[in-house]
Length: 260
Image (cartoon, rainbow, N blue to C red; front, top):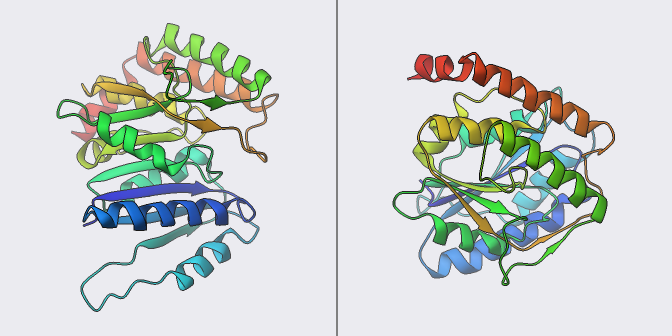
């Protein structure tokens, strides 16, 4: 069982994924191996119709690990069709990952993999969920975001804080770390497939009694975002309202009781 699993959801990421894979692999090989820790990279192809799967398979072939000494493969691909949404892809990866700690990492590499050290440091004994934040002030962390996306994101987060998650400054950053048992617990209950799935899983985490530790990270806007602010923002708002209504009527408490 590896110490760390990096789960990368990917939908039509043929062009951006190679650089992210190279960065993640290179960092983990150098840093984790130096400390004696092991890892796996799990890419979840969410029904892509470009060369996403081929990119992962080609990268894995050129970075094959010998299993003669009992090592498990370090680069894995999970693929299915048709496209189900980012929430479904992340949930699939988290439930299939084998690590002691599970990192959710976007395919565009907007959160440098080196930032996992900040999250690991934040994983104190009483924290099981540590989330990267672009909104938490920290002089050691720099966020390079487009103005209009930052404005829309801040507005969305104010709504989320008022309805569901007070005190959480950034629910949507795609860089989150979970202790294995907590991840299995939370993602087995989560059901939302759209972009607001982060809100749902963090709400479930709080219902489950997990403290959420928010850590400022370096983050860079990357071209080619799959989120369309004009069409996806209203959908995300409707999904948040759906979560809120479910919370009012005790839907999530019943799901948790059924899963327990």
